[in-house]
Image (cartoon, rainbow, N blue to C red; front, side, top):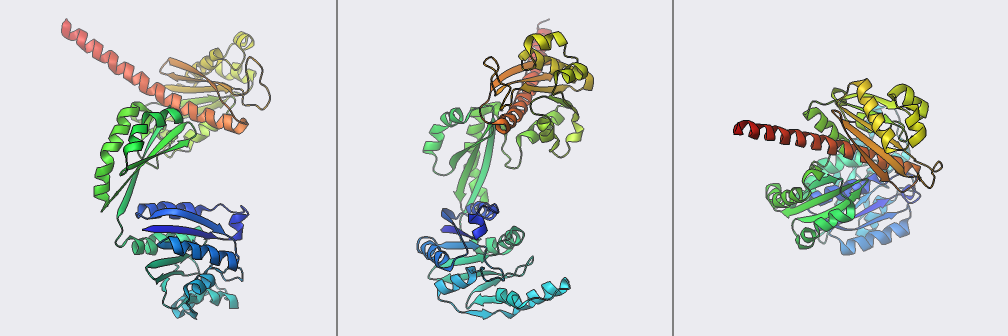
Length: 429
């Protein structure tokens, strides 16, 4: 079964508000097993809305319209939809009472145009709005379904989840998705590594999405029920994990890179401190955004000037003068100093040229050094990022999280390997 989404509102066309409704509805419809091939945004214009709706009805089984159910003259969705469907409007008394109660609870008097919202097409299913005054509407005719939803997300979302999803779920197959998130592998390389899987998979399907320093693979299966869909997903997800190994940081769609890093720190009973120059606290802010981070995060330092690097971290003046603040040597000393003064097992240091000015031929804009200190073992990486100042700083933060995760995994891998060698040596004695 196919679904088409029509978002109504001139404010959407002008960019005054972000169309979050379309993203929400598209995702929920996919979960229901509905195929969405078309989405439209149309302004508050009767002629254009009518044309878009007629086209949608002609090519899709379900048409969902959001917005334009308010009390003002430019709210035309219900009137246009009724006209296209050949339905007359009538006063729906339960909706009228709901509007009366809504205003009474707020000690307000409804105006005459509020009753417009209680007018619904004859023969339609009226969907109660528990969070506003505009009821939802479902019209069925000739095997087609036209669904009208209010525009405000705080009304649309609960109405769709409580009433529309169960209505659409009847008789549909189930689509279930799982996201495999990887870091430390570029988009082109990641896609090349799984191109054979993408080409041959029809159910489940694999779709790659590039993020900032990450690649997400959305694996989607269609089956009679969720249990069967999960069975189809399992071997594909397992194969992706096998190919990308430690680059997979989660298969939970809600887990961010920073949360994965915080969880890794907590699992190994490690604390962390950050020291930043060009990112000016962005790395600390991203880590601290994770709930429960107080168990692992110790302190953060912004050492933007050379004087701050000397006074706070103990970076020698001679080193700064010889190598410059943006250098491998200074990044190393920053990570060493941060660990020393904070007593954290992990310290991450960032120094670079974010631009737009300050770059030279030797040290161009985008040059960044990131150092990670795990229990005294320090690794420094050099990066050359492209983009404007904001992009370079954001990419630096993501890269620092990735390096931190990598260094922690490597450290404990080496520790485990060393223990195994010691055990083998003991057996030979």
